[in-house]
Length: 397
Image (tube, rainbow, N blue to C red; front, side):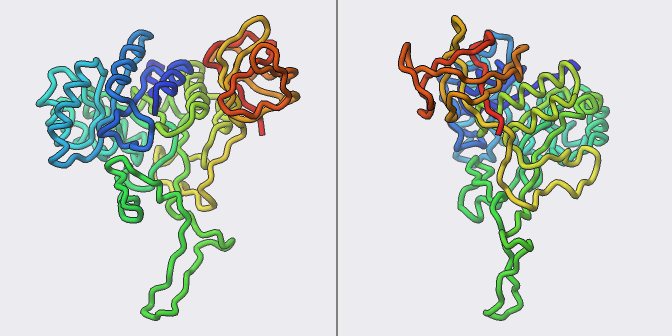
């Protein structure tokens, strides 16, 4: 399949991880106008550096500017879009028509991708944005493959991007008011507190003051009535490509390096070699809340996880590999491990899924330890494989 694998990157280290594990392009956010205000995000200097880094290895950078703008934002947006064009960003991701106008007013060549926040659910909406000069549409998650194919047939010139993996908002394509209403943090301006993941009870309102709370679930833990399962389309990528999708998008600018490495690695292998049991099992090793194909095959009543909102995964993130020399690897610790533990390699190379037992561990040249418990401490451990910088170590639970 000749498709783009598009990954999130909340900071520069995650950007490097995304590209190392096989992403063709990354979407990132600046300090302003991004819908992930609580991610690290990139300063203007870091954005320039990120674009230079990506282009140096044949990758692309798309920058999110998909807030719903107010009047006071417009002059700042014009300046920001002009900066993105001068920095060489491959595209800006926008959802607000005023932002589109600001981008066209302040730039000459900046490519515009219309965000899923614009609720692109039909062929005329996509055609409209194509005629306004947009080069790509990020389709709503609510679309079926048949509907996507119909859109592609209507506007074959427009690039179609669709989510293939990750958390989903319970509201229509992410346009949610819950966070603003319950916590005074507007999700449409990047401050979502994920109120849909909270547990809820309902109150019987019959006009009597003594009306009590009614549990929606028999076990008394409350009910996660708004808690969506995670999207997983790994088994249907060829179907998506046939429908006209040219860019497979992974959600997760707030996710860890380990999550990104695992999911990107799995989808890279799936694109290159096809779906198999290995890919299916691999996507259970990073955090997830049960999986669904959402509406890819039509209406689906099995998209909500009613049991709980806690993510699960089969592996713990242990360390990042920094160096390999003379039979030893130097790692930076992310999760506690001990001598005697069996660790597994996460790598885009042939070392993927190889395992070894930690026989020794050192801090520095000669301080031997048995319990590696200091986060971000560098440890030296013997390893039977020639690992590369950027590989990750994990431990099965």
